[in-house]
Length: 475
Image (cartoon, rainbow, N blue to C red; front, side, top):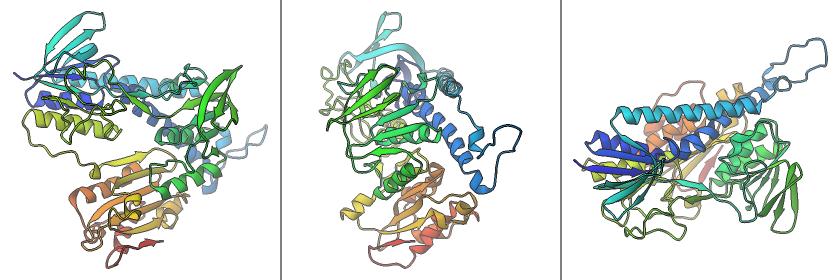
């Protein structure tokens, strides 16, 4: 019997546990907070549930443009449909927490049904071939480990002069403690997390100030996509402070004051610190086990999730490879496939699809515009503005585009960007094309529904037929 011990019950851990058990391993999973880890309990599931609520408000906000208006009764005249809606944040957050707990319970039930042993507590390596588990009641147990997987995730980074108190100065795990909408929410950080929360609370009607150290939001994403999102934010009334770096936050009375590096201050009722994440790799016995880490504490792994210690693997945000739940889950599965002798392909980051859940959403896969502009990859590209799509016109959508990259000679699809509502669903077509090395001609011959937003993917492929050179086609 092969003993498999997994430290951490997030996507990397619990998906690995299911594969390990399926392949005949005796799997023990150690988790101190609850199945699903931060991804389910305080990060991905809660934030995307909040965003789903904000998305409804966004749709309601367009109702008047579509010819829908509130019924008029006696009393004050209501101007728009949105004016008839009140956000009860206590109920919103109670629903969010309830859904996260239910998802965690479902994962736990699945693991137990498959025969995985679950230990509620923490674990650390005791050399490369055993794990010391500390149960929630304080008792310890030494577990034999033929194979070990570390999937301990990451936690929000905090600035030394802006300690999060969970009331006024918040990290993203603490946002669900709020029972009333902030009077004015300052969001520090314009990366994915900061942009998503800024977008959601802006749609819920909150006065939002977004502090960005760069000249544009989402500096790590497609530049054209970031430009569209910034324009949408500004047109909606959001205040964006570009090239501004926050260095401190202080509670003053019933509000907060954020201090910038240049001495300026911003006042608000609450501040969200979205300034990155720190891997949970302290106290795991990594050095003693011969496991190398990066200067930031991330565990170094290869493309099949192996660390520098024999039979010890790592997956998820603690590796810093690509901080996505889908990547963590795949890293965990690959680790088990490799360790237990099943067929396996190394992790291919070029086939990873990612999404920013703002309004509109931004989805990407494959090569980036930056790689093309820098000459790292030669590609032809086409950009179709969302406003030209018939379905988008029917829904009152104007902001966004669909971009497709292909190789100049063969026409093989190598990447794409979609900026639109539900881009997370639309990107799947391009993900399949990238993974299967489909050409633009093959993609163009696939039927799409008319009218549909996905029809623009097929149209983009048709526009790339027979074109030559590396110049972009923009419509």
